[in-house]
Length: 158
Image (cartoon, rainbow, N blue to C red):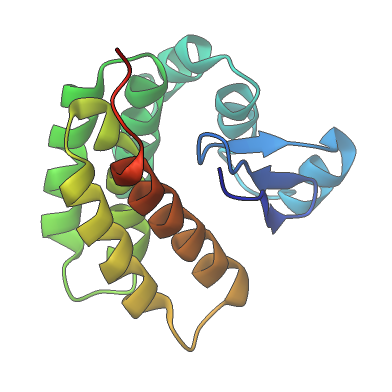
């Protein structure tokens, strides 16, 4: 298991499952002030993926809304739908500043869909795309890569 990585004010990316978790709600809300999707993100990151999904489905479609819908589906166990949407998002973002984030989100869904090999590749590419940029984003990509690589070394459960 990898260590938690600081994601921003009041939240971390857990090493146990690579999911965001709010650690200080007041700091999180303050740090996300002005983000029109803060309420949805708070629902998703506090374990209320179904409620977050219902709110997202009422919003105009955007790349960010689509990625959050895929995150909700991942958290609800619909890994194949999540991966299909991330596949489209990665293709649409190829060569842009958003490619790293979309690859990293897809990589978090791939192991549950039985594709740890693809997750490792996505995390590797996210690490490369994030080198020389935001250190917190690079740390989260490295965290994901380490977790995916460690998962391939664990023997299957009997």
